[in-house]
Image (cartoon, rainbow over all chains, first blue to last red; front, side, top):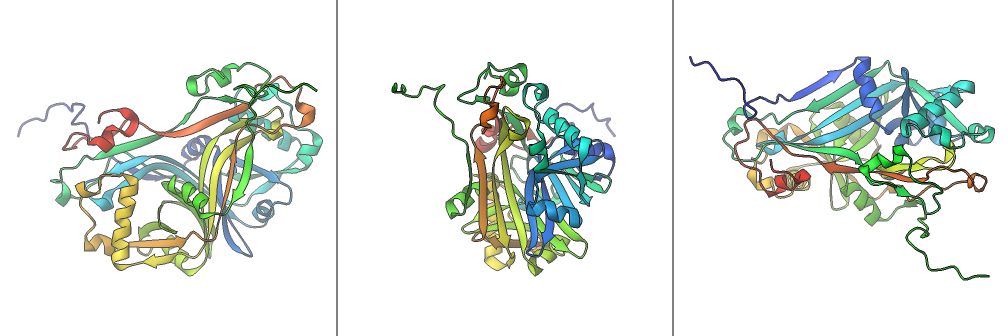
Length: 216
Length: 216
C-alpha cells in the first residue's frame, strides 16, 4: 500500500471537537471572555431569564443590581442557573440536518450569596478593571450612598459544566457526493470606533485609542 | 441671552435612550438579529438556562431539539421565558457607578407548542434560509428519519418586552468637573474569514465569498 504523503494545507483534517469540560481552567476561560451572562431563576410567576453584567474574581462569578430588585431577592432564596454563551460561527454541512454552530458555553449551578463590606467595594474595582483596564483611577469611585443602594452577589464556580463545539461539519457517509461548499462561517465580536460624549472633556487615552483601532 | 449657534458635530447632544418597548416591530427586529436565544425553564431540580438556536417565522419564535430531550419535555408542560440579548457596547462615565452597557434585549413569556406535519418541514427551510440565505437548494433536505428524530417547537411573540439602551453616559451633576474620557466603546459581531472543510468539493459560492470579505 502506498505511503500517504505528508498532509498539505488542503488535506489536513480539521477535526470537529464537540465536548464537555468541567475543569476550572475551561470554566474560567469562558467566563472571562464574557461581559454578560443570562440567569434563570424562578418565582411565583414561573421561570425568568435575565441578562446581566458579570465578572469573575477568583473562583466566583459576581453580579450586581439594585437593592430590592426582583432578581436579587430570588437569587438569594433559591438555587439558580447562570449561562454564558459565545457564538463562534455557523457550520455548513452537506445535509440540512447536519448544519450546526460553533460555540463556547458554560452553565453554572448554585446559590448566590451576598457580598458586603470591604469585599463589596474591592470587587467593584475588579469589575471596573475588567471592563476597561487602566481606567479606574480616572473616575470617581463609588460613594457610601451608591454602595448602599447596590447589592453585589456572587456564585461559586464549582458546579459548572462547559460545552463547546469547534471545527468543521460532520457529514453522513451517504451525503459525501453532494457538491456543496462545506466549512465554517465564523463570527467575531470586535470593538468598533469609540464615540466620545458631546461634552467629553479630554482627548482619548491609550485604552480608548486602542479600542476599534481609531482615535476618539 | 446669546442665541446658541447651530449644533456642530461636537456639540450635538447624543442623548442616551433607555427604554422599554412592546410593539411587534421592535420585538421582531431584536429577534431577527439573533442566531441563538437563552431559555429559562424549571423542572424538579430547579431552574435551567439553556442556549439554543432560534428563528422567527411570522409571529412565532421557533427552536428545535432532539426528541425526548429534557428541555423539550419541560417546555411543552409549563410556561418558560426566552431571552435574546445583543451587547452593543460599554458606556464610560465620570463615576464608577454610572458606567453601564448599551444593548438590545427582548424577553418572551409563554408556552411553547409542538410544530408538526408540513409546517414542521417548511419551517426548517425557513431556518436554513435565515442561517445562510441562498444555500438551501445546494444541500440535502431532511429525510423522514431525521424529521422523526427532531422536535420543532414554537412560542408566540405576543407576550414580549424589549429593553434597550443606546447613546452616551448619564453622569451626575456633581461629577461634571471630572477630567476623564467619557463616551461609548461599541462592539460589533462581524463575520470572519470562511474556513472550508478539508474535503470541501467546490469553490466558494457568492454567499460564502461575501462572508468576512474573503474568498473561501
